Length: 176
Image (cartoon, rainbow, N blue to C red; front, side, top):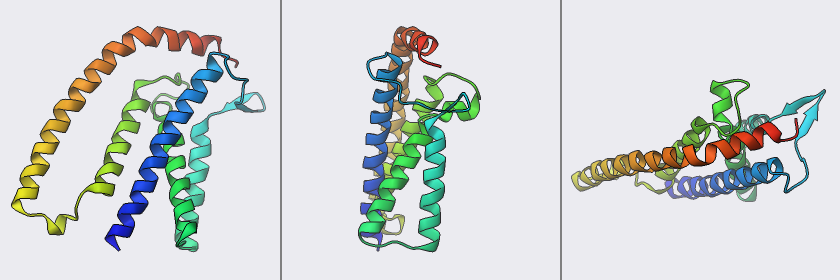
């Protein structure tokens, strides 16, 4: 049962990461006018992709509660869940700052955090089977990960100062 849950979590993680990457690339290409405008407008209002993610997550939740899928349907549901998470958390900054720009750092940080949590669920052994050695390694991994992410986000911050003006300019000149 646990291994089945881990393989489902791995599907969600892979779909989440691929959807996030594809979404970022598509939005950049549309804003840079390298692709036609694929954004949906309803009554002059741009419907952001976080809304698609919310509806997808609501649908997946309903399927999981009422249909309890197995086999291929569970795989499809796992993929739907990963897509919904990515579309929703990709615009996490807009949850915090309504009307804010798409290229908010909070969105990227939220995606990294969700991917890290999904990775733990997908790959770590059950806590009931941990020994002292597992606990020691968990502490080492947490310390090294903390240092890595601290440095990683410092590098991203420096990079952000260089590329943020370009993204802000794209957002200002993008189709409404």
